[in-house]
Length: 427
Image 1 (tube, rainbow, N blue to C red):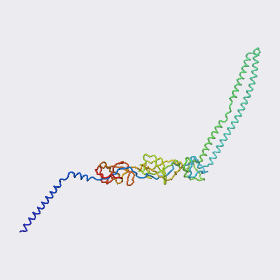
Image 2 (image 1 turned 90 degrees about the vertical axis):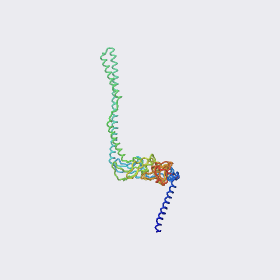
Image 3 (image 1 turned 60 degrees about the vertical axis):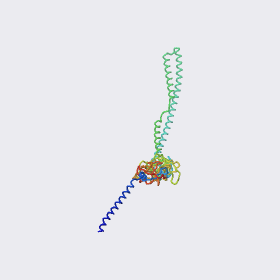
Image 4 (image 1 turned 120 degrees about the vertical axis):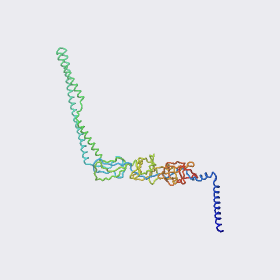
């Protein structure tokens, strides 16, 4: 009986303890509810992300951008035989420097020689015929002059006799020995004789040599034209250099025969000379607005300048590159085909550019971004990247010198996020 009574008593004590503990917990919760009103702002400040930034500066990204290049002749000209013929003399050999107009090879042709002799003989024959015709015409003219002079002398003597007879008849008329009709007849006779004499004198003064050479002159002219044409053919047997330059690729032997149009060699023009290189698309971007580039001979430090004469606008499908040519004077022939050079797409001044550390760049696919701090807000800004020189990379657009760019944990930031700047450090 005593044990049964103790069991209900224990249950009551246990229940009372649980109630007391619950009341204490509730009382403790109600005591912590009214906190300091500034606590929220403090916790928010503690929640801002701390960032370190740097100022964008212009600095050297690296050495000037260079590319290997090769010297080539600016133009190549074929040396062509104009006439058919056998090789007679080889006056220049492969590798010789020649001047425009220099005779490189002399050809010979028996057919042309025979034609030249015949044309020369025709000219001489025409000239001799003309000389003979002139001598003959001169003699005939002298004979005519002599004959006319003699006739004039005879007529002048006759005029003297007529004048004497006329004067006598006039005296006879005055004394009535002759009639007026007889005197008139004598006057007419004397007048006609004088007219004939005057006319003959005029013919003598106007007498000119007989033109017996006009046809012969025409023949001589034609013969000379033929000779000139053959002489030009003979000149064409001399194969001359069309330009000044380096003679190359001349596979000729003394026993060879050539046909018209046959190429006997190639002349490479070396002044001006061409410098050729192959560029990547990225390298061509550095040439915008440039008309000249610097170059130097491999193994030396002396810099020269060359004018850009050609820059390909499309990529070569075979070389996968863009061709660039420089044209430079080469009077002293310092540069020769095959020499290796280095050309510079950029100068020292082109190397000073805005840069950012690579670890401050956020990549999203092909796009690149940096976070720029303005006040206490970061802005996610798209940038176009250029040359890389670890740990720095050139920025072509998106930021400028003096901008504050986040360098610590940029991948954890969001655009327009409020942050706490802790330090401005150097790049």
